[in-house]
Length: 566
Image (cartoon, rainbow, N blue to C red; front, side, top):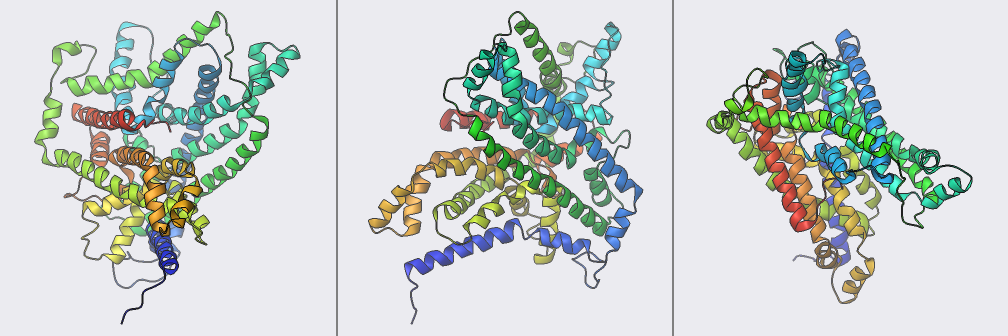
């Protein structure tokens, strides 16, 4: 005879099941990395014992500390350049009468919507010492590109293309929130409009600047694709490439050493992002002086506005437009050189090479499957987790919110390694790891915080009174949540799916430790090609990535109003 659980008890059990499941999938994979770093043999082998030898080998390796130093210098340079461009653009394009503000803003944030690897390929094609524009300048003028791309400053300049829009978006929201009455007070004391803007509004950006600076530094510190492509020729090693070479490309992988390095990287990045989260509290304290009682007004720059617009257009042309042009030219020509007119060597052979290569073409199909199925399942999971975390009386709902945000602290390489060791321990046969399901799970967990950040605000906007009205009509908690909260937030779920699809389609770092010959994915395939070749096939892959990404984002914008810079 079966005994039915009361409805309240069933809801409580389901909440605990969701909490435990989320904890296991998101945080649980980190445990095997720590164990692997403290174990003398790989976890999939029998025997072994606890040891600190892996950390001793890591910390006494001069190459490791050289990689840490390179990563720190690169991250610092990228952060500094991004702050200059991002903060300056946020003020000029938001609060002044610079011409073509909408166009310049669109070009500035365009890299946010594109795979970062595509821009690296474009930079190499156009601004490398042998690139098209660099060669044309040296042949026809006395000018040369002032920075060597195959150096730390050069790589930082490329990274700024993607990082500066992040700073811009952080600061732009703060600039828009500043009450113009504060500037009016300064002007009433005799300050000119531009002086009032600089002395009042700019200081109020300090929390947003510090917040975005730490985020950019953390992301730059663990980047893989950029140093793998541009740092190889001059043997410039970052922390990420150090781990990559000691596992993926080494003749005898030292998995214990790499696991110890991954723990170090996780601690560093987590510490930086914890500091960033603390700064969010500082931002909240600034709301007492940033009301929006009146509509924002633009500051007249006078005749200098056209010079400012021209300067911004030139910088964005160098950083964004020219590299994207390089991707297109490389993809549709058989050879790209200023000695030959591109229009005379137009071809589709690079795209034909992708179609004819079974691994390359299969990687596109696999990525679409991972992004489509994985994005849909992840969207459902995020919706269920968000409902429990924010619309229930579950005692651990606060920790559930933090668990969902945890993947923001995990570099992509660490995420991939975490799932590798988890599958090695829980699935010795390798059936899951060798399938798209394993890769999709790693990609979904890595993108969890992104989707949650898109879905939660829409859920929070739905009044709890609607849920209670459904409950008084006899609906259970789950019935009320599904029929009211989730049903009303369906457009946000659609937006969440679109952004998860794009993120998972273009991701590559977690796949480094999970992809096999039977499960290639587009991001990693392109990364490997770019690291070993500068041919047109890499650019053609980039065009395919751009086309799919823009098509999905365009569909989302058309049907759901999704904005890529949300």
